[in-house]
Image 1 (spheres, rainbow, N blue to C red):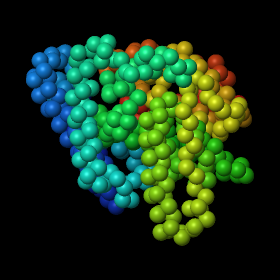
Image 2 (image 1 turned 180 degrees about the vertical axis):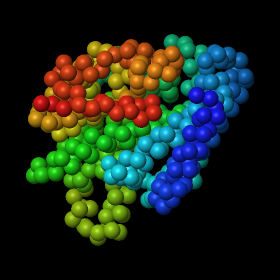
Image 3 (image 1 turned 30 degrees about the vertical axis):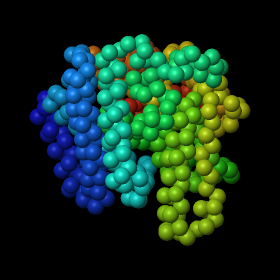
Image 4 (image 1 turned 90 degrees about the vertical axis):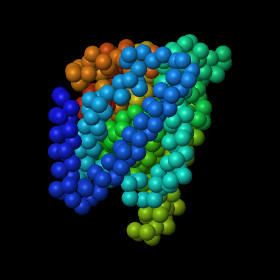
Length: 402
């Protein structure tokens, strides 16, 4: 497709939202404001990085991030990707598949100018460091402080600075800028891509409304816990959530995001229903530091097990082990496993030639990931594949335990 084709696609989607008006137009407007913010971050990050490269005599390769992003056709394509993603997300909302994002209409930190400025500053600093390390690609730029530590908790494949980000997953600096960094990379469509995972989760909840007990949901590799806030907002308020991650810094960020969601929902409930009983019985997410290959839970403990954007960062044998653990801890007779991650070879054929380039951002297992037959890991663990969905650069696979 040409630049004109992308622009026409964006224009067509914009007209669609404008003609609908009301909540649809509000959604479109707010998401475009977010995209504008993240686009500005990208411009500032690229500019600052290029200045740093020049001052420090760092040479950028031809496929360097700043050179690629500076191409107009790339920018227009990414904006079109965002528009298409928002269109798909809104269709799901309009059809009652899941709710409007809870943080769009409620005052929260993302509307605080001080928070926005702080995040932009953190992102620029991180972008300069990340892209400089990527261009130099030295072993010392991949090492993190965990490297000399012998511990059964942290597998060897975890001891690297994924994405060349500061200390990999093992620092508060990394955790505090991660959401802004990923949304900037995807120009504001990261949340919308993730929300595709809500489809099977909400469907399971509606189908199993009469269990006589709260649903039990587990997310492995929860990161900052951002997705869990959307999940909590769409499931019954008595649902019991458990989140697992290896990084203590990202675990703390998960707790912070959960506290913010609970604060927002408490205000909403008190305003709409004045229901003290519901508010008082809201439980925080149970957060556990653990390896997904060795989950510290009983067999068949959870109704649904979720894993998002983790499989592309672990080797194939670990994917097999995590799949087996997900199958072990999910309930039989309908327990559901949801895997969401990057697209692979063949999912979007026009990207096959360049998809593997992401490995250059210190993603040591990515080229193997995009060739791996993911479903086989889960089938070998006794699960049955039932569904595949895609949203932009993300795909979701759904499995059921017989």
